[in-house]
Amino acid sequence: MGTPIYLRLGRNIPVCGPARGIGRVSAFFQLGTGQTIQHAFEAAGFYDVSSDRFNVYLRYESDKEAIGAFLGSAVALAYRKFDEQTKEEAHAEYIESIQPYWNASAYEISSKFVIVAGRK
Image (cartoon, rainbow, N blue to C red; front, top):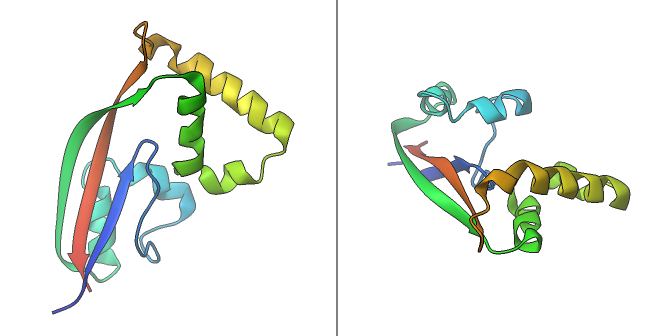
């Protein structure tokens, strides 16, 4: 039996585990739709593939905490390459985009996650 391989995808969650062979970066953000990621695992030679979907609320009690999500998100690699001005602009746009989720004490952002496991 092969060693289980895990890949997690979700808003503000980076890919974990060996992601080689599951698709190009351009397709990364589409992997969470339907059974796309499960099929990608199978196409990459994994077997006993299973997946689980669940909803959570991401809670950020301040702008600073919300901005910290950039450091652990799927865009972290690109974000690290931004100069300070670009980072500040991205922060401002991000905070503006999540304002509807502020509830007087914190941002509460509904998010969907997919966890896929397979053996190779």
